[in-house]
Image 1 (cartoon, one colour):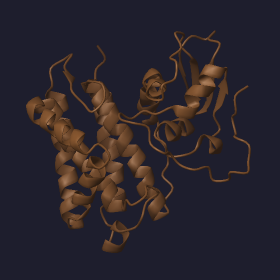
Image 2 (cartoon, one colour):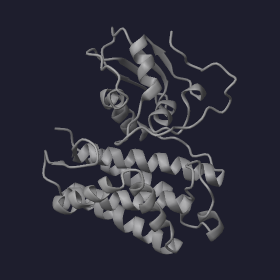
Image 3 (cartoon, one colour):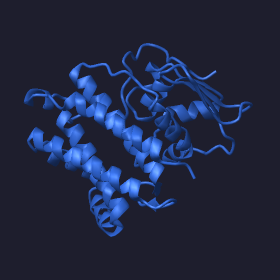
Image 4 (cartoon, helix red, strand yellow):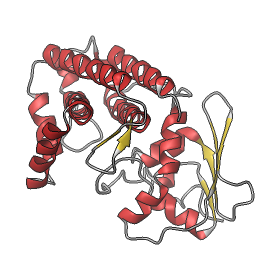
Length: 271
């Protein structure tokens, strides 16, 4: 079984990088709108803090987590926004302190978890590694939204490898969420990481293939960019269909982001 320590270390590093971005913000900057409709910078951090708290419950108190799931089921379209709205109403110093405390509590809970443990979630159950990867994915994606609001360009790192791995593993989940047939065969995925290293998944002789920059793949599977604005290439109808619906997060598919120029043909269209 894979050692979760590397992804836990990278989750801590990703969170620390985002923390540095928001730590010195003034009230006006915390209130800036982000690309997520209705969400400010404060909403984004509040969402991360809330999800970290939920994750701690899932790891340490599954009965309490089950009660949280029951609450969510009573308002499936509102519970995420409601939690973000509640957190965003706190003073920024308190919100930041809460997020720091919640993410460290999660680090401690996951590092202390027994080998092979699996925990309930709003989607499929998760192992220590998969939960840490999901938290890294969300931290990175919501960090992009915050950076966009602040007009900051963040330098991608090879921590994206974890998000890519999650995106490849959730292929069948994403297709199923859209009621699409799940291919029996694996795809070949070849993506270039920020350091220039080629990351590969699946058999070399697969009929369906996806290629391109790892950063673009991560932006796609977190719905931070429209496929038409990304340099991803799909070879084969099944791979093409997957890129249209790919998502690495639990729950129903969102609306995604609109293309920046609807008049252009999609870049990286199927061959």
